[in-house]
Amino acid sequence: MRNLVLIVALLLLGSPALSGQDVIISGNADFKKLCEGNTLPKVEGWTVVSKNVAGPALSPEIWCGIARIRKSGSDYIATLAYGPVRCDRMWFLSKGLVIYNKGSKYSAVCLVDGKWKQTLKGYNCEAIPFGHANGAKAQLLARGKDGFYSWIDEGGKHLPGTPDHYDNTVLYGRNSEVAAIKTGGKWGAVSSDARVVVPIQYDTLYLTSPLRQWGGKWASANWFYVSKKGLWGVLGDNGVEAVPPVYSGLSYWPKAPDSWCYRKPGGKWGMRESGGKQILPEDYDGLSPYSFSPSVSGSLRLPFAIIAGRGKGRALLNHKGNELLPYMENADMFDMLVMFYPQKSFSVFTWNRYKLWTKGEFESTAEFEARKKDPSRTAGYVASLLPAAEKAFAAAIIGNDAHLILSRYDADSECFLFSVDKILQDTYRIRVPRADAPLFKEEFNNFATDALKSAKYFIHNDLLALRSITFTTPEGKTFSFENPAAEGYSGPSLKDLDLIQR
Image (tube, rainbow, N blue to C red; front, side):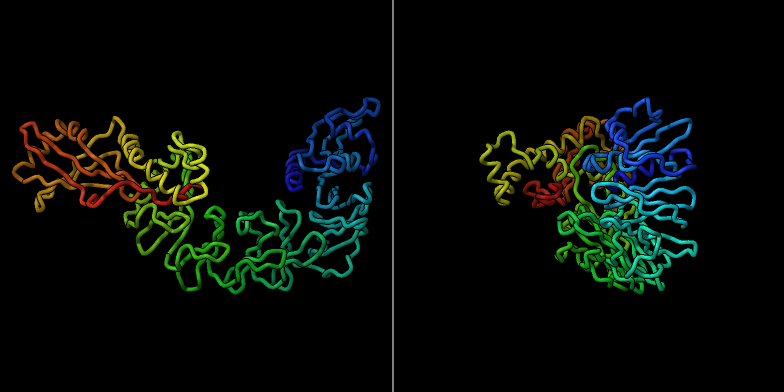
């Protein structure tokens, strides 16, 4: 229904304004041919100008689409629901209700006992973009000349049992079931059948745009962000208070999965699942989701990532709060590492290369089915792949065009700084006595390529790191580097077995 409303709106907004006489004919069977893709009989004198058949999942006997047709040089709008109409615009609303206008005059057509009939004609108001058909009665939220909104019946009279007026409304075009309403300085929400579904007692209220799941299930309610005295919460139009209005900051991350990021007044940010389980403690100065650029990540299967701020530093976390990239205060380096994380992460590489969510090449069907049900079997299977994955990952990162970069010399410690251009995050120190330093620097390019061939690597913080390298000068002197971070290293591991499995 919502898709059709959008399609119709786009179609009609792009059409020339129409004006003139009212309904010509109603319920003519020939219009069914128009909906089925055929032109109207020539004897009727109609010509199809353009047509837009309704999308799938809509009842064809009720909604067959909309088309512009022409007769005697005049344009009309036609539907199976109702015959050719000269109007400025037409709305398809919930429960079998069509509204159209000519200038400030609005009319309504309602489905009654399987037949369409006009229930409101020429109602003089500024807009009726929201409504509901209940049996033979149309219930419409209309704005009159006084500028206030109120509910009217099919005759244009005030609907019994509803408020005399609302000060303001927000009609959600993507959702024809609910509208925000304001009266007495407070906001609430009403449904299309005139029921108040969120109490009119909040300072601010608006429909949550991304919140379509709740607790991992498709949402059965419309959810609203609401605020009182600057504090935010979430309420559903089914009466459920999902999050009490006690937070100064609140956002929903459906891919986390199904988690809330929140901030208590005067406090820090934290994160928890919809069911209440704490993911991140209330210990952060800022939390925000991060979406990897497709131009960088390509078609890789990616983790959900969170940028977590603490003091001057930031870290990249996964959906369980584990560090994908450790805290660092160098903002430029951090931004670069985050951007290239999908390409540089050993975990992402392993999941995508070995497709751990499918049966392995050398794994029997029985073994695959068994490990899907047993986390310990899965862990064992992954561990068996990691040594080969580490070698393949190093080869993929380093490639055939890597080179060494020699930086400044520190005379006090008698060390050169150097790096591997394909390893973005690390700069290493190698000891070269001052007496050898000038010649080492002068001849570096002559022996750097051979030195790189001897280099060994390991996985550190989910990224490739240099483990050791030996430089041999043309004079036969050797200078070796051993990475202290590799001390005690026994083999690679993944940051999280379900890092990108969702």
